[in-house]
Image (cartoon, rainbow, N blue to C red; front, side, top):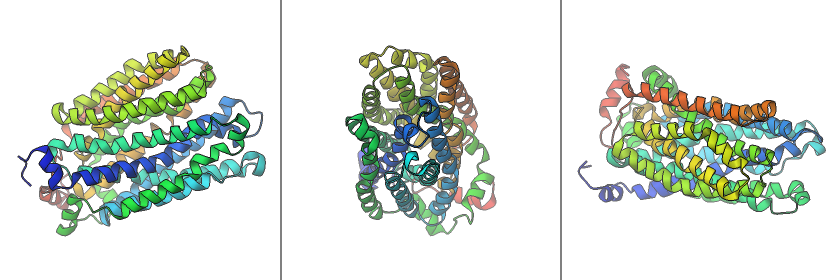
Amino acid sequence: MSQKAPGASDAKSHGIKRYIVASLIGNSLEWYDFFLYATAAAIVFGKLFFPAGTDPLVGTLGAFVGFAVGFAARPFGGILFGHIGDRVSRKTALVLTLTIMGIATFLMGLLPTFQQVGIWAPILLVVLRVLQGIAAGGEWGGGVLIISENSSDKRRGLFSAFSQGGVTLGFVLASAAFYLAQLLPEEQFLAWGWRLPFLLSILLFGVGMYIRFRLPETKEFEQVKNDGERAALPVLAALRTHPKEILVAMGLRMAENGGSYLLLSFSLVYGVHVGVERGTLLLGVMLSMLFAFCTIVFFGHLSDKIGRRKVYAIGATALALMAFPFFWLIDSNSPGLIVLAYFIGNGICHAAMIGAQPAFFHELFSPEVRYSGMALGHEVAAVFAGGLAPFIATALLLTYNSSTPVALYAIGLAAITLIALAFSRNVGQHRTSPTDTQKHIDDIRVGRR
C-alpha cells in the first residue's frame, strides 16, 4: 500500500469502512450488555438482591461489589481471548466474547430476587457478572484491532476511535432501556420492568452474531499468520517483550476507566442521594454520551495531527480540573446544569482519553502479541480503576456524606495517568501499517523487545 494515498483512497483500498461499521455495531451490542449491570447496580439491584430494610447506600454498595467482581474477571478474559486472538484469529475471539456476554446478560433478566431465593440471588448475580467480565475482558482489544490493523498510520487515530464510539453507544442503549423501563409505576418496575432491558438483549445478540460471523480477518494478523511467527504463549511473550508498555497502558487506564465510572455509574448513586430525579440523571447520561460519540471521533482525529500523548494529557488534566465542579453542578438539582456536567465530564474529559486510546495502545505493541498485550494493560488496570471506582466512591459518600473525598479520588486517578504519560515517551512507537510487520516478527523471534 502506498503511504502517499489520501485518506479516502486508503479507506476504500482496505475496505476500512466495513471494519468500522462491524466494530461500531458489534461493540455497541457487546457493551450494551455489560453496561446494563452498571446501570441496574446503581438503580435497582441494591433493593432486589439484598435483604429488605437495608440502607439504600449499603444495598448499592453490595451491588457494586458484584460490579467489582466482574472487573476482577476481566484480566482472565483478556488472557484467554488474547491467546485465541493472537494464536487462532481475531474473529474467533470476538464471536466467543459476544456469545458469552449474550447468554450471561439474558440470564440476568431471569434471576430470582432475594425475597424469592434468599442468599442465592446475589450469588447467582455475581456468577453471571463474572461471565460478563470474562467476555468484556476479551472484547475491547479485538474490537479495536479489527479497525486499527486495517488502517494506515496517518489515519489510525480517526478510524480506530470509532470502536470507542461503539462503547459509547452501548452505554446509551443501556441507559435508554432503563430510562424507558423506569417510566413504569415503581411497583411494576421493581416487580418485572427492570428485567426487560436484559431479556431484550437476546435480539441484539442475534444481530451481533450475524455481523461477526461475516467479518474478514485483519490484514496484519493474516500477514503474521502467513509468516508463521505466532508466539506459542502470546501472554508470556507480551510480558517478556513489552513489560514497560503494559505498565504504561495500565497507568493510562486509571483516569480514563476509573474516571468514566465515577462520571457514569457513581454519579447516578450520588444524584439520587442528593435528591435529583432518577430520570434527569439518566437523560443527562444519554445525551452526554451521544455528544461524546462525536467528540471521541474528533479527539481520535486530533491525535493523528498533534500526537496521542498530547490529546490524552488534555483529557486527564481536564478530569482533574472538573472533579469538584462536576458534583457541584449535580448538587444544583438544575436539569440544565446537570446535563452540562455530563457533557463536560463525558464529552470532553473522558472523550479525549478514550478517543486517543485505541491508536495509542495499538502502537505500544507489535502485532504478534498485540491482542494479548493490549488486553493485559487494558484489563488488569480495569480491576483497580473502573472496577473499584464506584465501590470506593460509594463507601466515601457513605462515610463522609460529601462529594469532596470523591473529587479528590478522581484527581488522584488523573495524577497517575499523567505520570504514566510522562513515562510513555520512551516506549512503543509500533506505528505499523498492514504491509510493514516483518521487522517486529524478527524482534519477537530473538526476544529483543
